[in-house]
Length: 205
Image (tube, rainbow, N blue to C red; front, side):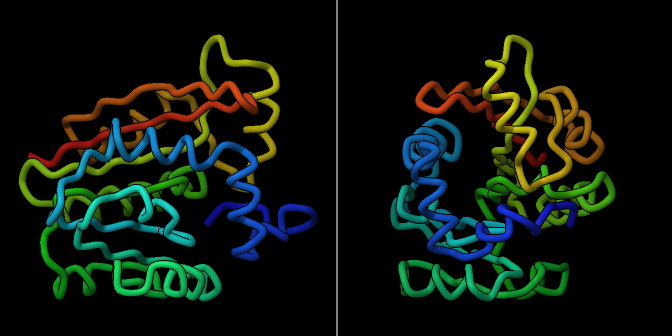
């Protein structure tokens, strides 16, 4: 996984610091919009969150069947304490053997994940997601991006992200299109503290 975990960025590995930083950066507004406009799940849907972190997105979802996987023991422990029986929180790297024991999913999430992955790891993620999805199910991702007309402050902040593979919107689409034939997305510009996200939907056929 390509990310910087030294210096100031190291403190973001602590769940409380990470959540506080996300809140300061307008994380709740972003998550609310993301859940309402892009995730669009219904009660009873099966949701798989790959690289779920502290699973903060769970607070913005209805009564779904939620599975969150992350390799950070601290993040998963924070998710379990906060959301308890509202989901299944697993501390491990998701692989194909896990999918054999899980249901098929209506939605697979990758929240702030792709920009931490090199092209090979991203391709593996797309393959895993496609295998996990029901026919017609969707992989939904959100990541920082570089975009035309981007606020210079946003571009600067994005460049300081821990993830070392931040792409343009076209770059993310190119990655996803190696596995999915139905890929759409949109750029979201945040105004409070200028920041730019690429939100992408990949539909399984």
